[in-house]
Image (cartoon, rainbow, N blue to C red; front, side, top):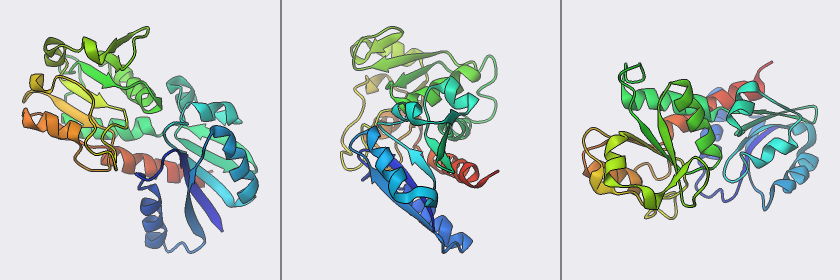
Length: 251
């Protein structure tokens, strides 16, 4: 039996098991299964490795372990090292190799949201990145690679950050791309949303929420009321999941 899984806490919102079980069925794979590992701390990964041994072929990493897992790895890809976060781990002969496929997934979704030509010089929107967790690392990497100017927004002050209290309508109006990398609004707490001045969001804005469950979050609804284009995290989720599958089963 080949075992794959996801580590994080909590995992009630995750659709990874549904996605991969459907994939197993489509491919006619009867020797695969997908497990949710809701770990109380990153140290508990050792118990998972010991329990499943050589059967465990790889796992996804989600909140809050995308940064913490790095110290447990035997190797890490150049891109994941540059990003500073890992969301995909391949297991081979007990050795853990870390990768970041969030960047790939986010890039595909961003191109779909903005449309062709909107990441070229002269057309790149300024961006606000809401949140500073592991997912935000991949978002920042993609924006920097594309030459997009951005500001990081956090609940607490810090170097290179602005807080939600600092967000004025003028700042929001000047940054047409707003990306939510926080878990606010995720099932079951669907009423949650980042505290930005939604009244300043207009038809020229693009709101991208990495949350995919529910598919239309309170954050996206707040932007849609002002006429903004919106996208949830489903495209990112599906594209990074397919990349994970390639990594787990590739040479």
